[in-house]
Length: 124
Image 1 (cartoon, rainbow, N blue to C red):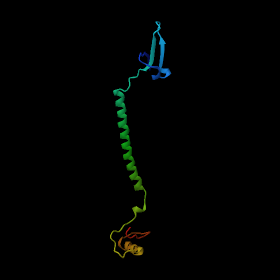
Image 2 (image 1 turned 90 degrees about the horizontal axis):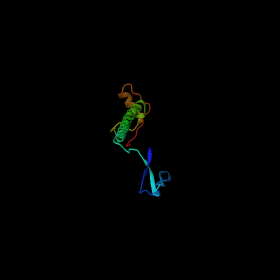
Image 3 (image 1 turned 180 degrees about the horizontal axis):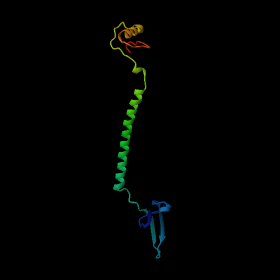
Image 4 (image 1 turned 135 degrees about the vertical axis):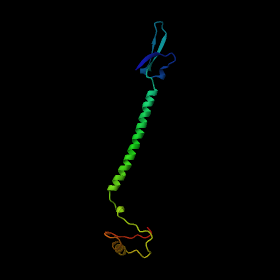
């Protein structure tokens, strides 16, 4: 909403053509009018609603972050990778670099163990 108000100090260059006009009174005096908005501007109620909305959005982003982290863990546990079945030996004997020797070691020392692929990497 808006209404026309008298504005004695207004200049035409301060307004667009649609928000400013001049007229003459019956006595020949120049009258200047400007279109003024009747809005209340920012109110405390508006500020509180915007603040509550901001808190809601931040809280929602936090919940989504927690949910995504949990889903990431769930997906990782469902996915089988070589890391799930790899064995790393720390401080092996210096001469233990033959994969066949390691395969024999695993078969003899771990009941039911099956090694499909055995590789060795030194100082990796």
